[in-house]
Image (cartoon, rainbow, N blue to C red; front, side):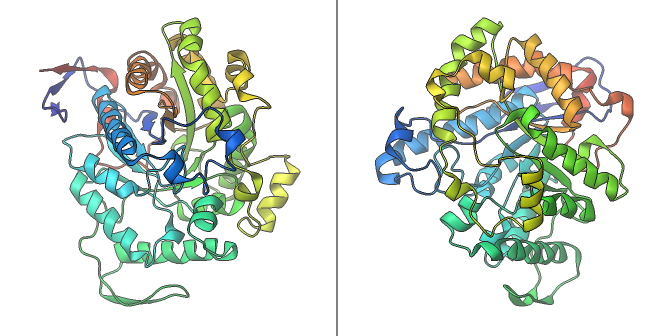
Length: 438
């Protein structure tokens, strides 16, 4: 099947195509502000909530970066990534997409077969949350049924710090919004909804999603046990998002898989996803030369969030806090003592970033994917201060020389990916390749 790029070039499949269920590679864009002062951490309290916009964020420059972000997402589509990932954050220099639905709408109108991974809409922030049901349905219709509907609880920085919600209401609002959205998609309307936070006389969204009974729902978590159980209770995909790398994530992911076992579900790896920063060069030495300063910059600036913002009391339940203490896990962003003196060896051996030649990256990724048992990988290939040219270099090396090596990791287990949009068919090119012709 041929398809066209945004620029009108024709992408034509080459070789023998075969229908397979493959591990999914998702290009996930954090959409950060790329020009931040090197001494940011010495001058400002936090990269999230309080970095002064008038001092640090030039609107003309932000517009340029938004355009670059979209170009990079469109390039990822052309390079054959299975999904294009976006998310929602506010008042945040390392990622300020604000409204992922606006960005998703641009992607949804493209002629493409890549899934749109909207991970997602922070439900407690929407009032009334019927808006999420409507806009996700619009995106599913516009994309022809390629939407993944992500519904995170949200970070304390966004929900409490930026939007002023009472901490103890965050999860209660989340559960109620979820129930409203599910009913809006699956019940014949109009019907009334009488919740604690939302009261609607007539629920009757126009349109409803193409995908029935609704688009695949993915959750995003950072270690809350309630999110693991919510995922298994509803048979949703769970995604662990952190910047700690697979070694640091092992305890949290194992907690999720333990919950899957308690729920009596199978250990299908497509139940789980993971986000990972990756940088690729022709050789290990080239990767260090090209990316080390950008990684130091990222850890010095983007991880500069104080514990009183990241760990606001009342957001996390007692059970989850007890579990973290028991396992000695710290969810606040751990800082290197001096990020600008951190070595390449320290960064890659800790696997906070997986970097090196295509062969090195593929080897480490395969081991990490099997260890965490994940079928959906969200690859962060644009890391804050990286410019457009270097980001594209990283993306192309990854797509052409790493991605083919990790696609078939779960082939021998024969699982079906029940959490992937049925009309996102990028997986079909597994046994062949793609060429772009003018």
